[in-house]
Length: 383
Picture (cartoon, helix red, strand yellow):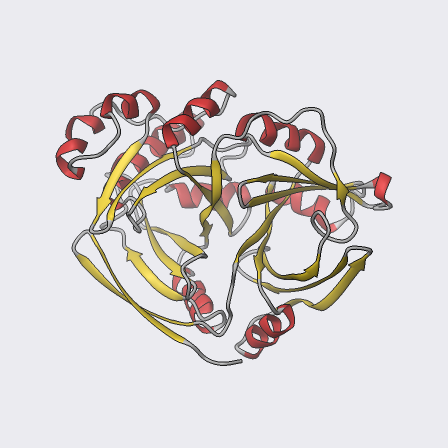
């Protein structure tokens, strides 16, 4: 496979970051994200109602799947798969008992799943699934996969010779209940939490094994409060369509959100999924009507945000009403908000983000955001 080198320069908050991405593993985008859950039917209802996902495909007893049920939801370019097991001794059931509902597969859309597998294995990846062809009357899909942090898996999905609704074995999921979309377009980034001292290891994995580059690094001076801190490296592929921030805890006076996640998830895993929208005010307003809970942003945050970010198109009073934060870099500005965890364990949550040119990750919002998270930790007694 031809080795391509792409060089880019970015500036975030006056800090220039030099990126060199060796794109030997072309990725077209995120194909789907699969969560192992305790009750896929109920989880699907939640994501339809609360997040506006639409019914797409289904596999289960009615389709000849004897050990599990999977519901596939779609909104924009996002495909979310929710899977639960009928067997209490299965890998799926073990995963749910240990982690709660959580992300198992981050599946990447590629043109050649065999080449993607061979290239990453050659560079040191641990095999999860050797290239496998799966077929039905609509064509052929090639799947392969490698292990990443914790029990999270990257699948490579090649579907250029497939015309079916999702994957072989799935049928169209016809449902009379399809609430309106919340305006979501695509996955902006997905964040992984790893153990103390493991961030550089996994950043190197993405660089050496998958050809990603370090887009930006945040240390404990960037992401800290009086009590807690963390460090993060954002890794991106050559075309910038895939971005994986990798977080690890940093030393602080009290337990950080990363440590809390690791304690309750029982190890490394996907902390949050950032979803892009073109109208964050409308998206958040509709989500609130549907019962989604968001982190509370202190009202004083908005007293100075205008001076920091300058002129924006949105009304700050409206943003304050909904708790939407704003940050700016040299390319433009962004708006973002974070849900509370979407299950009883304080693990997986979602970020809603609208980019108005900005390519950064809201560094100016970190202090307010993490103070809000600490307040939630206090309520849970885990700070």
